[in-house]
Length: 109
Image (cartoon, rainbow, N blue to C red):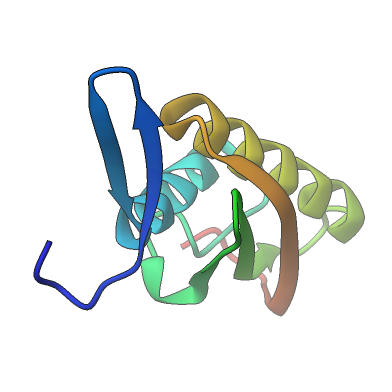
């Protein structure tokens, strides 16, 4: 692989699987689609950062939430959605999902 991009590498019986960190960001962004109360982030990959660990990933999401919803409950839902999507699609362990609420919106957009 000639890119300077970071990959998570998994060795299998017949070879290896290399997953680009951009793929993990895309999976995380897509997982936000069904989280009630999240206004941005649904396909906003620029506000999601992935850090690769030895055998796991760390995810940070910057989100705008809808007014009137519990920030703590939405954050917990985001953590569960992101973790579940990444682990089920890639087999990579998610060590941590940090949710940074960057704003509150009065309308759903």
